[in-house]
Length: 426
Image 1 (cartoon, rainbow, N blue to C red):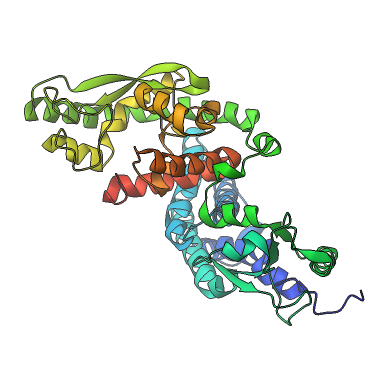
Image 2: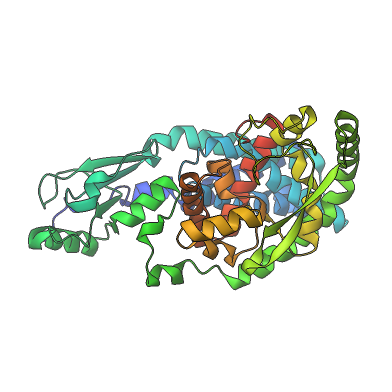
């Protein structure tokens, strides 16, 4: 088949790659965000004299800008992410980190320029998002065969069914097809091969389902996919260091809040402020999780919380559950190595035994440390029945498959939003 210009990937032209990719950010955005604050404070020709405080300030702004750029680009790859909602937190976190580095290393810097660089970064990334958002919605062509016909679009993915195995004049980001369907036929296979030769990505329908839903379906697991679900041992070690450092940093800050919470619980209802419950942990080993008590101790019921309307929950319990304050004592579980800040939520032994009987592959979620918060928790919320647990397990498998710093940061931001707004807690 002769290659024509019709076989062309969307945004593949040089000027599109420049404007929508890293080159524009690095060659235009980075110099602009550095130069404007520097010119405003130090005047024209500031680069001719570079004492330590100027060099450190410029380096800090540049480092923060690059970190923000990579974080936001990574976030945009995860399903259902409204990037605009994470620009301000990402920019703020990046500049807080560089300020902390400068503070602890006792390096000189200019606060005014650094703060102006922070504001310039906010304006740059917000402007870039709102100007380019119409171009960032993925446009995917669907081969109308097999399971591909069941795909559903999302706010971030536009799906268009192809009518024939030939270009239709539209440039697409990718092609999706049921590559295992017996009905695919030679013509469609030839078309997909030609798309691949022209550097248009071709995805199996299963990959697109995961990308849109943020879940790995249990009935799609195979021996080969278990290999792809094996989390990175290197990142697991780095994450453990982050957990220890974060817990040690947060304990002095959160101790007053924990004391007030404990006093409120004791005053609201009889019984201890803390309770310990045995749960299934890392590699299937049981451990005792620390939590603030949110229920009456003299009422019997199921071995798990039956939703937010459970009559066993106390008045204070409803408040601390809404804002996740009941989870604060788990900082000690993190220090002990039994939990992480981010990971699949640990289930009680009773529920775990029940799920292992009725939910295929449930035990595999213990391949990483359980977390105080997790991808399933921020996306789905609470689930106790088997049907809800299967969906939750699909979210957990997606987290394990995409086990990375970027996904952990995204879950952290979603959790912080829940803590401060109470929205999304279940």
